[in-house]
Length: 259
Image (tube, rainbow, N blue to C red; front, top):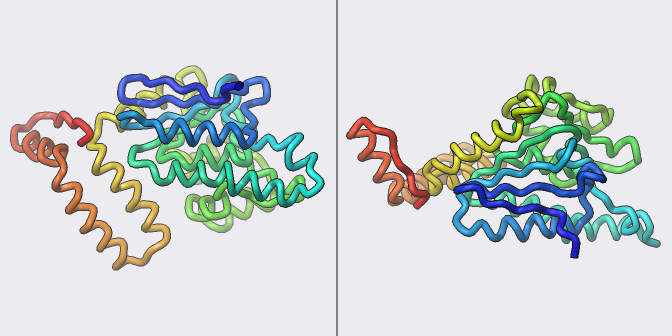
């Protein structure tokens, strides 16, 4: 069986690389199934870095020979989304550890959704983000229609989705869609350094923050404050919280262990 995800543990960071460079890492459903399996096997990793091999992050879904060749392409596409792509996106959202994406070249379609699902998206100067579905008579998927208005507002999300034009890295940064833009030759090192920094943090608290941020998109003010209080109770009982308090009193840098 061909492996489409390269998995490498580097210290406390799990590095997952989409590995179909000859197809600009276009993602068939099986790739996202493999990605989800890799995410389910963190084995103590305290941060995840998702990157693409070669000159692209991910040029979109690859359903050639599947949905496109099906007698019922609509239902075939629905099955690919509900059984492969969407559960993987949900798995990323539900992770208890932070996620960084490193984007060079295209992040298109489902690749755009995957890149922006990370807590921090670091892009190279060659990167661009694209929702090209309108050009082929389709609609955004992979959570893009939920994610983009929240990241960049209705007007800019409409521009991306209804006009189907590339958003270069510099514009994506200006819009607040991504974390940073760096030179292509330092992308990998910069993204890994950020993932490594996150992995050295208080893992319990960071995992709870991820959930708070996601919940705040959907809930009201009172619900957000209640969840904060509940999460603070959990975080306050962690070993990292105790270490943080002691380090503060001793005026030294905390040595978090992720517990």
